[in-house]
Image (cartoon, rainbow, N blue to C red; front, side, top):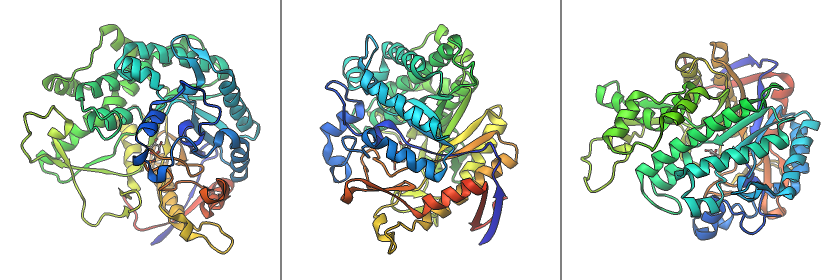
Length: 478
Ligand code: BGP
């Protein structure tokens, strides 16, 4: 173990993130305003840990002022959340705004600004209206792309004068990967071609929102529009060509499928060929590709949690099973890896540095920041001290090491502007609900969802105040 101290640049963001559906709860939600997630929860409550889900969440809808006061206490510079598309409108076709919900969003934004916390707003964090899934098959439909852009316009009109950080989607690949590629979630349909169409339509929707944002001059006051992506830092098991190729293909299907068109304006030729070969090419027009080309994002938030280790696929493909990218790869289980056993994710902080260098070298050193990174731990109550404060030293080490590698990437020239923790308070995860806790602030479910700073909350506060990070590292990666 060696101690390292790093200075944190004055303008470097140290914030925390969350989303609408994972915090708000259903208070005030009207009939017909279910999101896709609400519907999944309603249909399949048994898969949600201990029955908790979006219904109660953290009750942020009623307790936002309390949470914002805690943000002030910690001194966050930025806070990201989403606007719940399914609740922002009462009529998705004619984009009729729900004034009660819109007032609440405005209040959250104003209260954040008033205490010096910069709001960062995502237009979608999986909150696709269930109505649009039922009626148009969700993001399969170009009509839904148009409705999303109309919704975005309503949002920009309302809050564009004060919000400086906009994002179209959080992790646009996730819903369709779980639902249509791997059929792990409601409505359990395996359809690789549909997966690819959703991927494409979300890229198109992002480009159209960027276009609108520019045309209407919402960037004039220094505001920016980007996207939050979750590229998987991918390492091949070995240097052998077959493993290297497997990791390369994995990277094309899961990372470059969004990073290339959204940041560089074009799909990788090799990915287009693979899609052609496996008959999963998305429906598109030359005009749409031109919109994508001319409307890349201003910057990107990158969510990074753990590395992905890949080896070549060795089993023969069952011809009766439709194509899946795992035709080319298998996951590789690295012996001796450090684990967060609660979540089942490997801990390897250098992913942040490696991503930083990749963005610098392969993505025009575009402005970016860590938009999510964090550690979900089960049964945190056992770590309470006599004063009932959770002593989450494991989280302090986790954040410290990851922040260290973020700052190291900055030092080595990557255009990284910040680090945002997932999450500000404990909140609801898809299926895992409140099982794994991520927050700087505990939500005590046994005590009316009362809020309590954890040790990490106090530590984060001192890091922000001192603008300096001191961390013990297992080893120095060079
Ligand atoms: C990211 C999502 C978040 C959050 C986080 C933690 O992928 O953007 O919404 O949930 O992961 O993962 P999980 O909740 O599955 O433990």
